Length: 199
Image (cartoon, rainbow, N blue to C red; front, side):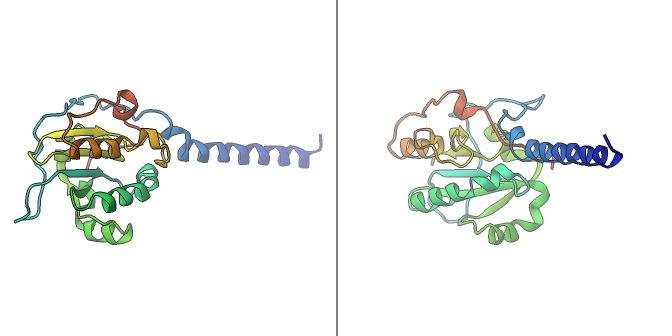
């Protein structure tokens, strides 16, 4: 084989490796469950969660949307979250919770992603720990009495397109119907997506 052919083969191999690396970064790593942190403490439904609420508002359920603008999975399900917020806006408050390092940019994040809900920064991961959340995107539904009702995935599909596994929506319907917290199994509670950053 001529030297030029070797160079062409080497270039093709490098390009193929680059494409595989990008595919891993963008796709495959999010198909696997998010690693559970070493000191993770599970939180079961029924435990009390202190949620920041606007002054003077009547107590109602709150869906905490754990969102990281740096996480592709968080961005993929935004359309679904916005749809839920619009559909349930009269009965449920929605609050986007971003990592603490975005504390100075909560208003900017709300505008940039056109979020129909307030955005708060979770300094020290206090809300995440209280709800048992260690990845994004995740939903934590807290009832009007301040007790965790559901914590888990929005859907088993990254794009939230599988109707029979719309876990967060089913939890919302269940809570509003006054039924006990549903048990969807590991498909709903095993986190997929991006690990929460340290700050």
